[in-house]
Length: 585
Ligand code: ATP
Image 1 (spheres, rainbow, N blue to C red):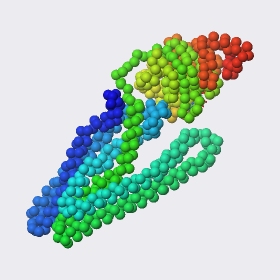
Image 2 (image 1 turned 90 degrees about the horizontal axis):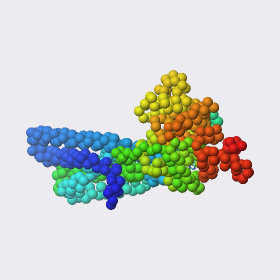
Image 3 (image 1 turned 60 degrees about the vertical axis):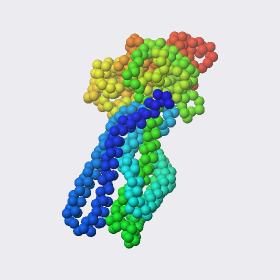
Image 4 (image 1 turned 90 degrees about the vertical axis):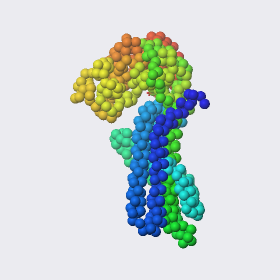
C-alpha cells in the first residue's frame, strides 16, 4: 500500500483511532462492571446455601453490606463508561463536523460521486455522522464490550451443571438465528418504506418552495392528488414493514419468556434429582440472563449496527473523495488570465454535450461579452469559467494552473460570480455583500457603490443591516441582482463572471453596471459578461458568440462586429440572436 493511500483510507478511521484511549477505558470499566455482575449470583448462592443453613444473621449482614458496596462500584463503573462514551461522541462530532461540512459541499458539485446520498446531500452526511455517534455512544457499543463475557457466564453455567450450559447455548443459538431470520425478512420492506417516505417528503418540500405559483394558478388540488398517491404508497409499505416487525417482536418475546421459565424448570429438575442446590438453581437463572443479555442487545441492535456500518462506509467514501486540503499550502494569488483548452461540458442524463470544443485565451484585465441564443450554453460556460461545472472535459487554466486544483476556500476571494438566479442567503445586506465573512464596512460600501446600490440601501430602515429575508424574498428582482453584483465584486476578485447581471435592471441601473465593469477593467480584472442585451458590447474588449454549445465567433470586439456585418451583408450565414442582428445592422 502506498503511503498516500494509507493516509487516504484513514481519514475517518484515523479519527476513530484517536479515541483508542477512551475505548480502552470503556473496556476496563466494562471488565469491572461485568466481574461485579457476578456478585448478585454469589450473594444469592451464599444466602440460600450458607445463611439459610447456618441461620447466622451476622453473616447475612456482612454479606449484604459487602454486596451493596460491590453494587455501588458496579453502578459507578457503568456510569463512568457511559460518560466516557458520550464525551468521546461529542468530540468525534467536533472533529469531523468541519471536514464533513466542507466535503459534502464539494460533493454536491460532483454528481459522479459514488458516495451515494451522503455525497449528494449535506444533511444526509450529518445524519450519517449522527448515526455513527449514536451507535458508538449507545447500548450497541456497550453490548460489544459485554459480549466477551457471554462465554464466561456460559462456562459458569456448564460448571454448575452441563445441562444448564447446554440449555444456555441452545437459547443463544435460537436468539441469534431468530434475529438473522427476522433481519433477512424485514430488511427489504423497511427499506422500501423508508424510500417511499423520503420520496413523498421530498415531493412535498419541492412543491412548498413554489407555493406562490401553485396558489396563484390554483394548482394545489392537482398536486395534492399526486402527493396523496405517494403518501398512500408510503403508508402501505410502512404498514407491511410494521406488521413484520411486530410479528418478529412477538416471537422474540415468546423465546425470552420461555427461556426464563425453562431454565428455572431445568434447575428445579436437577434440584429434585439432587444434582444441584436450590441456591445453584437461582444462580443459574441469574447467570443465564447475564449470559444472554449481550446476545439480546446485539440481536436488538443489529439493524442499528448495519445502518451504522453503511453510514460509516458512505462517510468514509465522502471524505476519501474530498480530502481536506492542507491549510499550510498557499498559492500565489492569480492575476486573472484564463485559458480554456478543448473544454466540453456534460450532464449525466443528457446524451449530447452541452458545450464542446471550447478554446479560449483571455488575458488579465479583459472584458469579454458572451452572447448567444437561449439554451446555447452561456450559463454553463459561466460555471465552467469559475470551475464549478462538475462533468467537464478539457482544461480550464487560471494563470496557467488547472482551476479544479485550487482549494475553493482559497480561490473563492479571487472569484466574483453572479449567477442568473442570484442566490442570496438569509442574513443582512452587509453580510450578503461581504460573502458571510467578517464584514469590512469600507469594502462593503465600496462594493455597493460599485453596483450602484449605496443610496438605495441607505433608504432602507436599517440600512446595510436590513435583513433580506430568506433568499432575498423581501427585495425586488433588480435589488437582488444589484446585491448579487456587489457580492461578486466585493474584496479584490481577479476573475469576475456575471451571468445576465442586467436582466432586471432599468436603463439607469444598466448604465451603472457598465460603468462598474469599466472600473473593474481599469483595475486589471478579468470580466465575463453574459447578456442578451446588445448594448453591453460597448464595454467589451472581446466578444464571444455561443451557438448550440460551440463557439461560433470569438475575438476582439471590433473585428467580431465587422465580421458579423460582412457575413450579414453577404447574406451568407444567419446571425444567431436578434440582438446581434440589431447590432450589426
Ligand atoms: P439562457 O440564455 O436561456 O439562460 P443559456 O445559454 O445560459 O440559456 P444554459 O443554461 O447554459 O443555456 O443551458 C444550455 C443547455 O444545457 C440547455 O439546453 C439546458 O437544457 C442544458 N442544461 C443546462 N444545465 C443542465 C443540467 N444540469 N443537466 C442537463 N442539461 C442541462
